[in-house]
Amino acid sequence: MATLLQLDASARPGRSGELPHGSHSRRLTARFVEYWRRARPDDRIVYRDVGQHPPRPVTGDWIHAAFTKPVEREPWMHEALAESDALVDELLGADVIVAGVPMYNFGVPAGFKAYIDNIVRVGRTFGFDRSRQGLPYWPMLTEMNKRLVILGARGDYGYGAGERMAHANHVEPHVRTVFGYLGIDDVHDIAVEYDEFADERLQASIELAERHIATLVAELAESLEPIAC
Image (cartoon, rainbow, N blue to C red; front, side):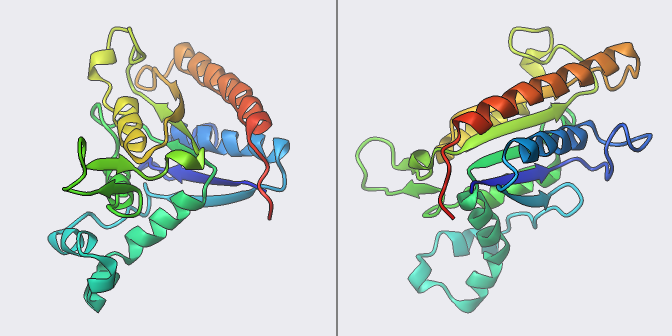
């Protein structure tokens, strides 16, 4: 049995196709999980909604606690890191992470940025040693063979590599950079575009994204090594 971690970051509470103003990224993550359950019905699905229930943002106390050695932490430090620890534990336990991350003003939603800030943890997801020759930082998840799928939605169009708005896309490149820093570099991304136009191009983009998701699920489900319960 493998574990899939589903993350939703949209501020919209429902899915497009079900509600008049529902989220396209939520629709895509739900479709991904639907196909995944068909392919691997015994796998465990963990759900986290950082759009409706965003993690607490990093504070000075959080930073102080995170950079204090675990054996030296005071009780208040453990409390400050409790939510972050839970999020990191979910990430460490996942074989596949499917993240619905819509584009907000060319970047990721605030809730997803808070999620990122909580999972980038010294001593848990990346290592740091000032005395280390070369780079003092190193990823800690490299040997875990995790896969990341980013499912996005954009109001405009042409944000893919080499397209008209690629220079303004700070969603997929940012997420790839962060997770790559932790050691997750098997990354796939699919996005819906034309949301602001709300015409036949949007519908075609949704249908194309769902077809790509079906293909990707088949590929990942077949390649994923089974994990003993």
